Amino acid sequence: MQEQITVIGDICKESHKTFESFFKDDDTTSVASVMKEAIACGAIEGSDEHFIASELFTKREQREMFLSMSVDTRLGWLRRKFSVKCHLTVTVMTKTIMK
Image (tube, rainbow, N blue to C red; front, side, top):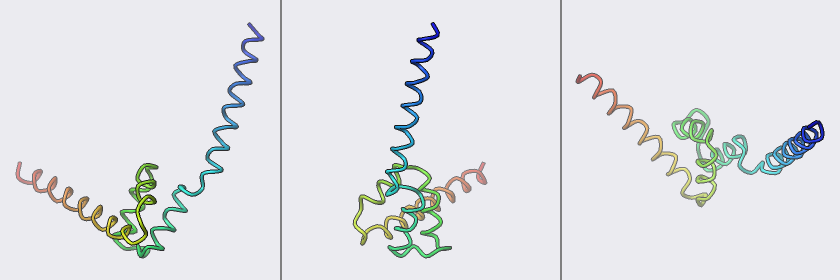
């Protein structure tokens, strides 16, 4: 029984090392690096585009989507995302008021 627990502990340690290694090597999709890319494409700090990027990029799949686009299309995508968010907010607020 003790030997099995030791084996499980060793497996956990190895898995943890692999997990840490994966995230250390994957700096290209970190929030900080993708936010730098957002600024580089024209999302000025404090702008609507920068704001929506800060909300979207908490999710890895959104960061990956942004990075998969050409630099020329990124700012437009952020603008559309902000516009959709605003439209949805207004729609929800209007429906709430109408009730």
